[in-house]
Length: 351
Image 1 (cartoon, one colour):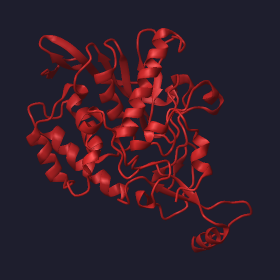
Image 2 (cartoon, helix red, strand yellow; image 1 turned 90 degrees about the horizontal axis):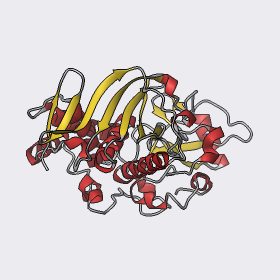
Image 3 (cartoon, one colour; image 1 turned 135 degrees about the horizontal axis):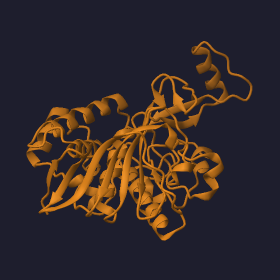
Protein backbone atom coordinates (compact mmCIF):
# COMPACT_ATOMS: atom_id res chain seq x y z
CA UNK A 1 0.00 0.00 0.00
CA UNK A 2 1.33 3.46 -0.87
CA UNK A 3 0.54 6.66 0.97
CA UNK A 4 0.70 10.34 0.22
CA UNK A 5 1.15 13.04 2.82
CA UNK A 6 0.01 16.62 2.78
CA UNK A 7 -1.40 19.45 4.88
CA UNK A 8 -4.06 22.08 4.91
CA UNK A 9 -4.62 25.07 7.18
CA UNK A 10 -5.74 23.04 10.21
CA UNK A 11 -3.91 19.71 10.12
CA UNK A 12 -1.32 17.52 8.43
CA UNK A 13 -2.42 14.18 7.03
CA UNK A 14 -1.50 10.90 5.35
CA UNK A 15 -3.89 9.30 2.91
CA UNK A 16 -4.32 6.14 0.86
CA UNK A 17 -5.89 6.78 -2.52
CA UNK A 18 -8.53 9.44 -1.77
CA UNK A 19 -9.14 8.50 1.88
CA UNK A 20 -7.41 10.31 4.73
CA UNK A 21 -6.02 7.67 7.13
CA UNK A 22 -4.26 9.76 9.76
CA UNK A 23 -4.57 13.40 10.78
CA UNK A 24 -2.33 15.35 13.14
CA UNK A 25 -1.99 18.89 14.39
CA UNK A 26 0.02 20.81 17.00
CA UNK A 27 -2.10 22.27 19.79
CA UNK A 28 -1.36 24.69 22.64
CA UNK A 29 -2.73 23.73 26.04
CA UNK A 30 -3.74 20.17 26.98
CA UNK A 31 -6.22 17.61 25.62
CA UNK A 32 -9.76 17.94 26.96
CA UNK A 33 -10.71 15.48 29.69
CA UNK A 34 -12.75 12.43 28.63
CA UNK A 35 -15.16 11.22 31.32
CA UNK A 36 -15.17 7.54 30.36
CA UNK A 37 -14.79 4.33 32.35
CA UNK A 38 -11.55 2.37 32.36
CA UNK A 39 -13.55 -0.82 33.06
CA UNK A 40 -15.78 -0.40 30.00
CA UNK A 41 -15.14 -2.38 26.81
CA UNK A 42 -13.57 0.69 25.21
CA UNK A 43 -11.48 1.35 28.31
CA UNK A 44 -10.18 -2.22 28.42
CA UNK A 45 -9.31 -2.12 24.72
CA UNK A 46 -7.42 1.15 25.22
CA UNK A 47 -5.48 -0.37 28.13
CA UNK A 48 -4.68 -3.43 26.02
CA UNK A 49 -3.34 -1.50 23.03
CA UNK A 50 -1.39 0.85 25.35
CA UNK A 51 0.29 -2.17 26.98
CA UNK A 52 1.15 -3.65 23.57
CA UNK A 53 2.69 -0.37 22.42
CA UNK A 54 4.69 -0.04 25.65
CA UNK A 55 6.10 -3.56 25.35
CA UNK A 56 6.86 -3.03 21.66
CA UNK A 57 8.91 0.07 22.49
CA UNK A 58 10.73 -1.78 25.27
CA UNK A 59 11.43 -4.71 22.88
CA UNK A 60 12.86 -2.75 19.96
CA UNK A 61 14.90 -0.38 22.15
CA UNK A 62 17.25 -3.01 23.54
CA UNK A 63 19.77 -0.40 24.75
CA UNK A 64 17.16 1.34 26.89
CA UNK A 65 16.99 5.03 27.65
CA UNK A 66 19.84 7.46 27.08
CA UNK A 67 18.93 9.94 29.82
CA UNK A 68 17.31 7.79 32.54
CA UNK A 69 19.92 5.78 34.39
CA UNK A 70 19.06 3.02 36.87
CA UNK A 71 20.51 1.39 39.94
CA UNK A 72 22.93 -1.39 38.98
CA UNK A 73 23.89 -2.44 42.52
CA UNK A 74 24.78 -1.18 46.00
CA UNK A 75 28.47 -1.09 46.81
CA UNK A 76 29.85 -2.87 49.88
CA UNK A 77 30.24 -0.73 52.99
CA UNK A 78 34.02 -0.50 52.58
CA UNK A 79 33.86 0.48 48.90
CA UNK A 80 31.01 2.90 49.62
CA UNK A 81 33.01 4.71 52.29
CA UNK A 82 36.00 5.05 49.94
CA UNK A 83 33.86 6.41 47.10
CA UNK A 84 32.10 8.85 49.40
CA UNK A 85 35.47 10.02 50.72
CA UNK A 86 36.69 10.67 47.18
CA UNK A 87 33.66 12.91 46.68
CA UNK A 88 34.57 14.88 49.78
CA UNK A 89 31.73 13.53 51.89
CA UNK A 90 31.10 11.07 54.68
CA UNK A 91 28.85 8.01 54.49
CA UNK A 92 26.10 8.32 57.08
CA UNK A 93 24.90 5.35 59.14
CA UNK A 94 22.58 3.15 57.09
CA UNK A 95 23.28 5.06 53.88
CA UNK A 96 23.90 2.99 50.74
CA UNK A 97 26.16 4.15 47.96
CA UNK A 98 24.28 3.25 44.81
CA UNK A 99 25.85 2.82 41.40
CA UNK A 100 23.89 3.99 38.38
CA UNK A 101 24.24 2.97 34.78
CA UNK A 102 22.69 2.70 31.31
CA UNK A 103 21.92 -0.47 29.30
CA UNK A 104 23.96 0.71 26.34
CA UNK A 105 26.46 -2.11 25.69
CA UNK A 106 29.18 -0.02 27.35
CA UNK A 107 28.68 2.73 24.79
CA UNK A 108 28.35 6.32 25.96
CA UNK A 109 24.68 7.47 26.00
CA UNK A 110 25.83 10.84 24.63
CA UNK A 111 27.63 9.06 21.78
CA UNK A 112 24.51 7.03 20.86
CA UNK A 113 22.29 10.11 21.09
CA UNK A 114 24.58 11.83 18.61
CA UNK A 115 24.12 8.93 16.17
CA UNK A 116 20.34 9.18 16.46
CA UNK A 117 20.42 12.95 15.93
CA UNK A 118 22.57 12.66 12.81
CA UNK A 119 20.40 9.91 11.36
CA UNK A 120 17.03 11.59 11.95
CA UNK A 121 18.21 14.93 10.60
CA UNK A 122 19.09 13.28 7.30
CA UNK A 123 15.77 11.41 7.16
CA UNK A 124 13.46 14.34 7.77
CA UNK A 125 15.61 16.85 5.93
CA UNK A 126 15.40 15.14 2.53
CA UNK A 127 12.68 14.04 0.13
CA UNK A 128 9.63 15.74 -1.35
CA UNK A 129 8.07 16.44 2.05
CA UNK A 130 11.00 18.00 3.83
CA UNK A 131 10.20 18.95 7.45
CA UNK A 132 6.62 17.59 7.24
CA UNK A 133 5.42 16.87 10.83
CA UNK A 134 4.57 13.23 10.14
CA UNK A 135 7.92 12.70 8.42
CA UNK A 136 9.64 14.13 11.48
CA UNK A 137 7.80 11.75 13.81
CA UNK A 138 8.61 8.84 11.50
CA UNK A 139 12.30 9.80 11.39
CA UNK A 140 12.45 10.01 15.18
CA UNK A 141 10.88 6.55 15.52
CA UNK A 142 12.98 4.92 12.79
CA UNK A 143 16.28 6.36 14.06
CA UNK A 144 15.61 5.34 17.66
CA UNK A 145 14.61 1.81 16.61
CA UNK A 146 17.69 1.48 14.43
CA UNK A 147 20.11 2.50 17.18
CA UNK A 148 18.01 0.61 19.75
CA UNK A 149 17.72 3.42 22.33
CA UNK A 150 16.20 6.83 22.94
CA UNK A 151 15.11 9.61 25.25
CA UNK A 152 11.51 10.38 26.19
CA UNK A 153 10.48 12.22 23.00
CA UNK A 154 12.02 9.53 20.79
CA UNK A 155 10.35 6.74 22.80
CA UNK A 156 7.04 8.60 22.52
CA UNK A 157 7.51 8.66 18.73
CA UNK A 158 8.12 4.88 18.73
CA UNK A 159 4.90 4.38 20.74
CA UNK A 160 2.88 6.70 18.50
CA UNK A 161 4.20 5.01 15.35
CA UNK A 162 3.24 1.61 16.72
CA UNK A 163 -0.28 2.83 17.46
CA UNK A 164 -0.72 3.96 13.84
CA UNK A 165 -0.14 0.35 12.69
CA UNK A 166 -1.90 -1.57 15.48
CA UNK A 167 -4.79 0.47 16.88
CA UNK A 168 -8.35 0.36 15.54
CA UNK A 169 -9.60 3.12 13.29
CA UNK A 170 -11.19 5.78 15.47
CA UNK A 171 -8.39 5.68 18.05
CA UNK A 172 -7.16 9.08 19.23
CA UNK A 173 -3.74 9.62 20.76
CA UNK A 174 -1.53 12.54 21.69
CA UNK A 175 2.18 13.07 22.25
CA UNK A 176 2.08 15.49 25.18
CA UNK A 177 4.74 17.76 26.68
CA UNK A 178 4.89 18.22 30.46
CA UNK A 179 6.77 21.49 30.42
CA UNK A 180 7.08 21.57 34.22
CA UNK A 181 9.71 18.82 34.06
CA UNK A 182 10.49 18.61 30.33
CA UNK A 183 8.99 15.17 29.74
CA UNK A 184 7.08 13.79 26.71
CA UNK A 185 4.82 10.74 26.66
CA UNK A 186 1.68 9.40 24.97
CA UNK A 187 -1.97 9.36 26.03
CA UNK A 188 -4.61 7.51 24.01
CA UNK A 189 -8.33 6.84 23.91
CA UNK A 190 -10.71 4.69 21.88
CA UNK A 191 -14.45 5.27 21.83
CA UNK A 192 -15.66 6.28 25.29
CA UNK A 193 -12.45 5.36 27.10
CA UNK A 194 -10.78 7.96 29.30
CA UNK A 195 -7.24 8.98 28.39
CA UNK A 196 -4.78 6.16 29.12
CA UNK A 197 -1.05 6.82 29.61
CA UNK A 198 1.64 4.91 27.70
CA UNK A 199 5.11 5.89 28.94
CA UNK A 200 7.72 3.08 28.65
CA UNK A 201 10.54 5.54 29.36
CA UNK A 202 10.18 5.23 33.15
CA UNK A 203 11.69 2.31 35.10
CA UNK A 204 8.45 0.68 36.28
CA UNK A 205 5.84 1.03 33.55
CA UNK A 206 2.12 1.21 34.27
CA UNK A 207 -0.61 1.94 31.73
CA UNK A 208 -3.18 3.89 33.72
CA UNK A 209 -5.80 6.61 33.59
CA UNK A 210 -4.24 10.00 33.09
CA UNK A 211 -5.60 11.19 36.45
CA UNK A 212 -3.57 8.44 38.16
CA UNK A 213 -0.34 9.39 36.39
CA UNK A 214 2.60 10.95 38.25
CA UNK A 215 3.02 13.45 35.40
CA UNK A 216 -0.32 15.23 35.67
CA UNK A 217 -2.58 16.62 32.91
CA UNK A 218 -2.44 20.12 34.43
CA UNK A 219 1.28 20.39 33.64
CA UNK A 220 0.86 19.76 29.89
CA UNK A 221 1.30 22.95 27.87
CA UNK A 222 1.29 21.66 24.28
CA UNK A 223 0.71 18.44 22.39
CA UNK A 224 0.52 16.75 19.00
CA UNK A 225 -2.96 15.33 18.41
CA UNK A 226 -3.40 12.26 16.16
CA UNK A 227 -6.69 10.91 14.80
CA UNK A 228 -6.41 7.45 13.25
CA UNK A 229 -9.14 6.97 10.64
CA UNK A 230 -7.65 3.86 9.05
CA UNK A 231 -4.98 1.54 10.46
CA UNK A 232 -1.73 1.95 8.53
CA UNK A 233 0.70 -0.73 7.38
CA UNK A 234 3.86 1.28 8.25
CA UNK A 235 4.44 3.79 11.09
CA UNK A 236 2.87 7.15 10.31
CA UNK A 237 2.40 6.04 6.68
CA UNK A 238 5.96 7.17 5.94
CA UNK A 239 8.25 4.69 4.18
CA UNK A 240 11.84 5.81 3.79
CA UNK A 241 13.60 4.84 0.58
CA UNK A 242 16.63 2.56 0.78
CA UNK A 243 18.77 5.40 -0.54
CA UNK A 244 17.56 7.69 2.27
CA UNK A 245 18.26 5.08 4.94
CA UNK A 246 21.73 4.39 3.55
CA UNK A 247 22.51 8.10 3.46
CA UNK A 248 21.35 8.48 7.08
CA UNK A 249 23.41 5.48 8.21
CA UNK A 250 26.47 6.78 6.39
CA UNK A 251 26.07 10.25 7.91
CA UNK A 252 25.78 8.77 11.42
CA UNK A 253 28.47 6.15 10.83
CA UNK A 254 26.53 3.57 12.81
CA UNK A 255 27.25 0.30 10.99
CA UNK A 256 30.09 -0.66 13.32
CA UNK A 257 28.09 -0.18 16.51
CA UNK A 258 24.68 -1.54 15.52
CA UNK A 259 24.06 -5.26 15.79
CA UNK A 260 21.81 -6.88 13.16
CA UNK A 261 19.24 -7.88 15.78
CA UNK A 262 18.75 -4.24 16.71
CA UNK A 263 17.11 -3.29 13.42
CA UNK A 264 13.37 -2.62 13.65
CA UNK A 265 12.24 -5.13 10.98
CA UNK A 266 13.40 -8.00 13.22
CA UNK A 267 10.62 -7.34 15.69
CA UNK A 268 8.04 -6.84 12.97
CA UNK A 269 8.87 -10.28 11.55
CA UNK A 270 8.25 -11.90 14.92
CA UNK A 271 11.73 -11.71 16.47
CA UNK A 272 12.47 -9.43 19.40
CA UNK A 273 15.78 -7.64 19.42
CA UNK A 274 17.75 -7.38 22.61
CA UNK A 275 21.23 -5.89 22.55
CA UNK A 276 23.37 -7.85 24.98
CA UNK A 277 20.61 -8.85 27.44
CA UNK A 278 20.20 -12.63 27.55
CA UNK A 279 18.32 -13.22 30.81
CA UNK A 280 17.17 -11.54 34.00
CA UNK A 281 20.84 -11.70 35.10
CA UNK A 282 22.29 -8.93 32.95
CA UNK A 283 25.91 -9.20 31.91
CA UNK A 284 28.50 -6.76 33.23
CA UNK A 285 29.43 -5.59 29.73
CA UNK A 286 25.85 -4.32 29.25
CA UNK A 287 26.37 -1.27 31.43
CA UNK A 288 27.74 2.20 30.90
CA UNK A 289 28.29 3.32 34.51
CA UNK A 290 27.83 6.85 35.82
CA UNK A 291 30.83 8.24 37.67
CA UNK A 292 29.01 10.11 40.40
CA UNK A 293 26.45 9.18 43.04
CA UNK A 294 23.55 11.14 41.60
CA UNK A 295 20.56 12.37 43.60
CA UNK A 296 16.88 12.86 42.85
CA UNK A 297 15.05 16.16 42.91
CA UNK A 298 11.28 16.77 43.04
CA UNK A 299 10.45 14.70 39.94
CA UNK A 300 13.27 12.21 40.26
CA UNK A 301 15.37 14.37 37.94
CA UNK A 302 18.98 13.50 38.71
CA UNK A 303 21.59 16.20 38.81
CA UNK A 304 23.45 17.26 36.88
CA UNK A 305 22.07 15.86 33.64
CA UNK A 306 20.28 12.52 33.97
CA UNK A 307 17.01 11.15 35.34
CA UNK A 308 16.06 8.26 37.59
CA UNK A 309 12.25 8.22 37.54
CA UNK A 310 11.03 5.09 39.31
CA UNK A 311 7.56 4.96 37.80
CA UNK A 312 4.87 6.97 36.04
CA UNK A 313 2.03 6.13 38.44
CA UNK A 314 0.97 7.82 41.69
CA UNK A 315 1.68 5.67 44.73
CA UNK A 316 -1.96 5.69 45.87
CA UNK A 317 -3.13 4.31 42.51
CA UNK A 318 -0.49 1.61 42.03
CA UNK A 319 -2.66 -1.19 43.46
CA UNK A 320 -5.33 -0.62 40.80
CA UNK A 321 -3.10 -1.56 37.85
CA UNK A 322 -0.68 -4.29 36.78
CA UNK A 323 3.00 -3.66 36.24
CA UNK A 324 3.70 -3.74 32.50
CA UNK A 325 7.51 -3.79 32.59
CA UNK A 326 10.23 -3.41 35.20
CA UNK A 327 13.52 -1.47 35.15
CA UNK A 328 15.60 -3.97 33.20
CA UNK A 329 12.92 -5.26 30.85
CA UNK A 330 14.27 -4.01 27.55
CA UNK A 331 15.07 -6.05 24.45
CA UNK A 332 14.68 -9.79 25.04
CA UNK A 333 13.73 -9.23 28.66
CA UNK A 334 10.26 -7.89 27.86
CA UNK A 335 9.04 -11.49 27.77
CA UNK A 336 9.32 -11.54 31.57
CA UNK A 337 6.95 -8.62 32.03
CA UNK A 338 3.88 -10.55 33.21
CA UNK A 339 5.78 -12.78 35.63
CA UNK A 340 8.03 -10.46 37.60
CA UNK A 341 7.61 -7.72 40.17
CA UNK A 342 9.44 -4.44 40.21
CA UNK A 343 10.96 -5.08 43.64
CA UNK A 344 12.64 -8.31 42.50
CA UNK A 345 14.94 -6.33 40.20
CA UNK A 346 16.40 -4.41 43.13
CA UNK A 347 16.67 -7.37 45.51
CA UNK A 348 19.30 -9.23 43.47
CA UNK A 349 22.77 -8.16 42.37
CA UNK A 350 23.06 -7.34 38.70
CA UNK A 351 26.69 -8.35 38.35
